Image (cartoon, rainbow, N blue to C red; front, side):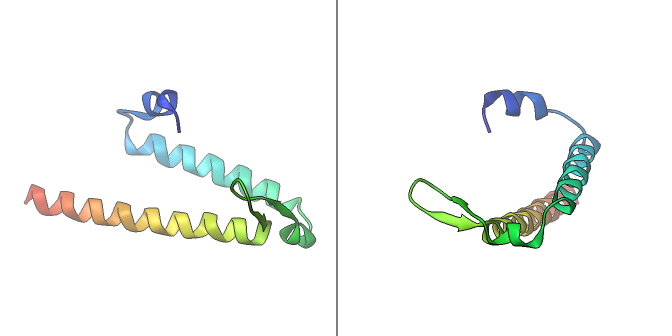
Length: 84
């Protein structure tokens, strides 16, 4: 993410981010429906010196989302604790 992304997303309400996330998810689901299962086995560059198939790359996407959800829950619990 570059500076323009931070400027675009700074100071928005939570609903802004949820709406953006839902649009991205809808687009992703629509595009994945068009893929054949064999697409998961296709290799693509992953970093400067590695290849990874789409199955692994999507595993990483899910793993990252779960990690970030945990971060969000932790931040929210700290915020709630600090307001009481």
